[in-house]
Amino acid sequence: MPFSESFIQHIKTIPGVEPHELFEALHSVPPTSIRLNPNKSSQNYTEKKPVNWSQNGYYLNERPQFTLDPLHHAGAYYVQEAGSMFVGTIIKELLKTTEIKTALDLCAAPGGKTTDMASVLDKDTFILANEPIKNRTSILYENVVKWGDDNVYISQNDPKNFSSIKGFFDLIVADVPCSGSGMFRKDPQSIEHWSMDSVAHCSMRQQRIVEDVWPALKAGGYMIYSTCSYSKEEDEQIVEYICNTLGAEIVNIPLPDSNIYNSGNGYRFYPNKLESEGFFIAVLQKTEELVGDSKVPYYNAKAGLPMITKGDREALDSYIVLPKENLFNMKHDLYYIKHPAELQFLSPYLSIYKRGIKLGKIIRKELIADHEFCMLHSHNIQFNKIEIDKETALEFLRKNPVVLDNDIGWAILCYQALPLGLIKNLASRSNNYYPTEWRIRNL
Image (cartoon, rainbow, N blue to C red; front, top):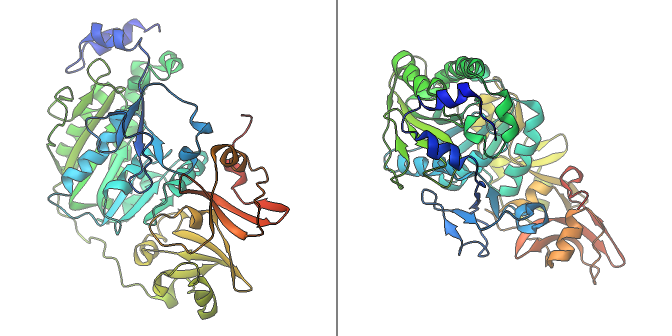
């Protein structure tokens, strides 16, 4: 792993770094870590070595072929770099002293921090996962759906689109694009693209991103700022800019591991000290008073989304009982929207990609369920559920026909009691309704 002389000299200027030990660690095999879904967790992993700073994080002895594990597709866990899991720990600490009703993951794909937020925040919290890059939104959507929470929504917007939403969010997680030096061990090819010019460019971009989204944070609200860069220009200096120019104070968090380095303006994870990649994270509380803070208006159905019909609601009740004021019909699909007022308020400003849980269609009083409905964990779904073995599960995930012994009709296939998706089984044949774009290929 050849490092340029400019990078070697740059690393020597970084607070808390021990250059020789760090470069030695960068030539080692990176650890593999996962974070369990507390609502779908499997006992298969709880005997593994825990991540010190994450209640649901574990290290694996080796990196398996996750694609061939049905539990991965069922949303039982998320494969995530261990340092990034510190976001959930910070949020749990903040919740001890403050209430968080609205939260934004600003640069959310592929979904690690979003799913971590969903696991630790209250289930009534409105969580918006935003991805500015269009071609990354689909993987974010897939991971959010598999995780199975009903309070996570997805938008696809540049950070500047949030500047008009004054004081809406109690919490903003900003894991911003960076020069990526902290990920060199996992992505050696990125080394050749690193330069001090790229660091300076990223620093300017990060400053713009924070400036754009800052008005959307309430006074007294919190921003969790993070990068996977070692450079002070992208880390401590951005934190200083936020405090001195935008108006914020640094919030100190108790450290569950003494090897996490506190630079004064944030926390640093070094791979020679911790089983993680390079990571920087800081917590800031907004101090400035806002004029014209946003107020979420009382939801008016007549002025907003079309409500579900009485007949469809009665048919749906045989599958799942949900509050009627949260059920809507959009383009002939039924939706459960837990936060209609918040969604209505944001819609004029943002491009919304996922606006609640898509339940499916009622046709002749029968629910043709959507995959989002099948993956929900927080509601009692009255639907045929069939337990299958691993071989059958992998055939289903390849979107091959899975024929059961009986004429059961619609059924949700489950692996180790966790839903994988929907089939319609008619004696000698069946239709596989697993999303085509998610199917396992070439394995």
